[in-house]
Length: 191
Image 1 (cartoon, rainbow, N blue to C red):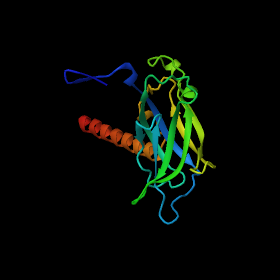
Image 2 (tube, rainbow, N blue to C red; image 1 turned 90 degrees about the vertical axis):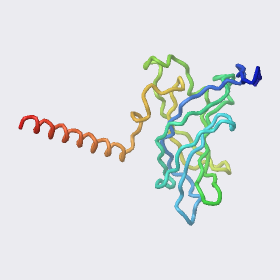
Image 3 (cartoon, one colour; image 1 turned 90 degrees about the horizontal axis):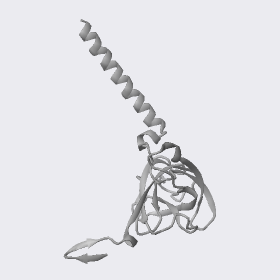
Image 4 (spheres, rainbow, N blue to C red; image 1 turned 180 degrees about the vertical axis):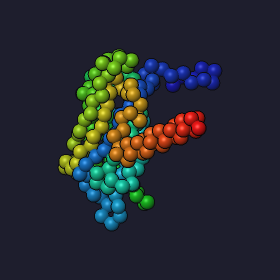
């Protein structure tokens, strides 16, 4: 970065691009916590200098569910058709002493960022992908489910993308409570 009269100016080479990735879940991961319950989280990045993390899944163990949109930054100069550039997802087991690697997966940017108009829904279909998770040894073990829009941005917000049964049940309870309140107000007005 250049400094002019105490201000930082970002050169085009230093500019960052941000994409959104929905990390949904993983299945059949290797249990690396043999004594305690395995609590996992995912670290998502294109370059290690800019990482995004999901929350820790407390209950899924070898089948965690995150349903979380993370924003991943990488240099704008990185061409989308570069066959080496990829969205990397490293999965870790949370620990009190240290974080233990469970596995990792990668998706090439050229396979997911197809361009299109961000404001045009027809140009921005959401691509759900299931990719192989590889243990630190390189052996395959488990699968990761994620969504990446071709433009790098979701047109609808995360609340609309979540398929959690628990969240759906909570939404139904909230809707029922609102309906009951409206009925009670309607009855009170009639009386």
